Image (cartoon, rainbow, N blue to C red; front, side, top):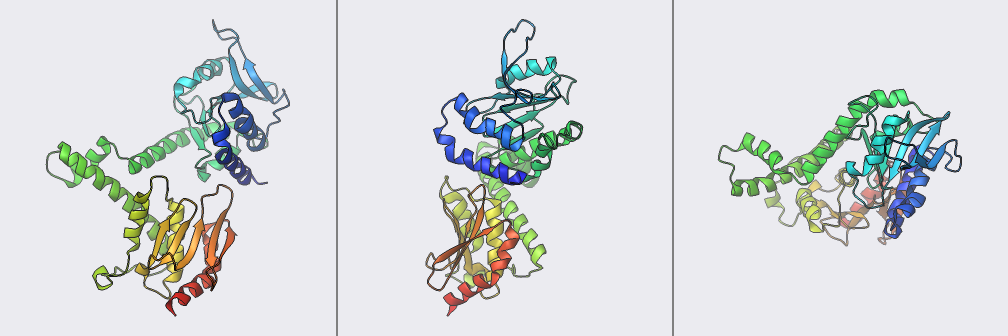
Length: 365
């Protein structure tokens, strides 16, 4: 299996077994040891490569242990400290890592709960572990841009110098991305104040704060959707997004209204940007035969539906993107029987363009 496939398989394992993991030892056995073995590529049963319960005397602290030490040529290269699955990782959990980092040759330390892996080094001061991770790998939502750097930490491709040289940029870019994502999802007062002050001349009262907190969150959501649309328009060279006066189509449901309703309908349903991109591709294909505002979407827990006229009896396609390992495009025949097609990327939706168009045409007949 390729590196990304192995990571996807482990992510699926975490998703399927998370509820059964109740202890730190179970977390190590089910999640962390497979990560060390299948992702980093070290032999967990070879003490020359992986030392469990690694001990080093640190000042007055005698007999303290770090869960795992990764060895290369007899030297400690990486230290791993584990917490129970579902525990929120905090820097306070890394006390052993801080102490051991300064008395070993390790340049990489990892704090993990088996689902999230925080990677640290010593950018701020030599031989002293940083407070902030330079790389955060979340198996619940894998950022594929991090895979090349993660691969450099594997046994086969170990390149410490390259990792360290890229760590500072990774550290701050990653932190900024996480902060932006958090603010777009749930803006705090400082974020709301920033944008309110640029568009509103009045005083920032409690009522103003309440009003603009909603407006900033809504604007952020619409901005992301528009960025997705613009990328697709550029790729397609399409002109299908001409504004339509909804008053002339009283029965039509605008995709923006449906998208907003779906995003707010059920807190357990998470509509992803990838699903919205896939929806826009299906919409662009279908718009060769119908007006764009007639192609609507509804997200559900198990799939993302693309519908004609927002009618469940008129399914155009379904996006099964919730699986960590494999994504599927669902298309429909004349009897509305769904066929799932495995796809590796969104561009493969175009391979089924004719089937999608035929489905739309059937509803128009």
